[in-house]
Every structure is written in structure tokens, then in C-alpha cells.
Length: 80
Image (tube, rainbow, N blue to C red; front, side, top):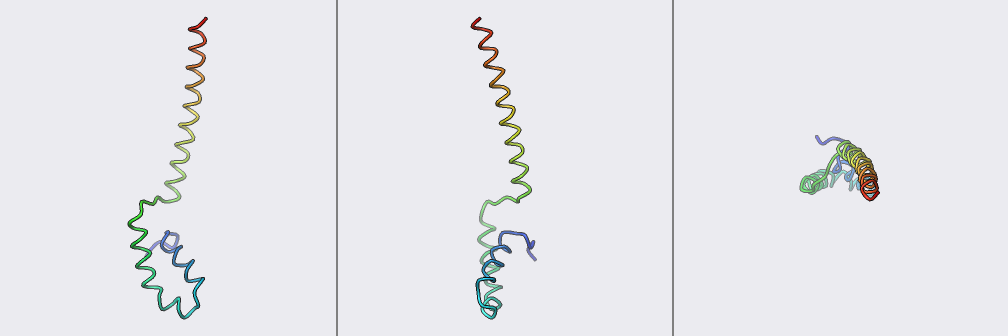
């Protein structure tokens, strides 16, 4: 069974809520298979991995800003 927070399960719950109850039950398995197949082909990352990468990017930007300031200070000293 898929993780109930997976993209395909979220997609299925969204469509089940929009369909009449009888129809939702009739198409659930086909919809789950199609959604799972489509999402498996996509290059998706988990929220956890996204948050980790966001923090890494933030630290990298902060370090870049520090280095830019250091370079500017060194250039200023060299001109004097």
C-alpha cells in the first residue's frame, strides 16, 4: 500500500472527494494504478528532502554573501 501522504494518494483523495460516492468506488483502483504510474515516472522529492535542500541553499547563499564582502574588503585594501 502506498504511503497515505504520497503524491498519488493525495491525488486520489482529491478526485474521490470530487466524484459521486458510487463512481469513486468504481474507479478507485484504476485511478490509483494510473496515478501511481504517472507519479513514479516523475522526478519528485519528498517534503523532507526539499526542506533539507532549502536549508543547504540558504547556508550556501549566506556563505556566498560573506565571501563577497571579504573580496570587496580585500579589493578595497589593494587599491589603497
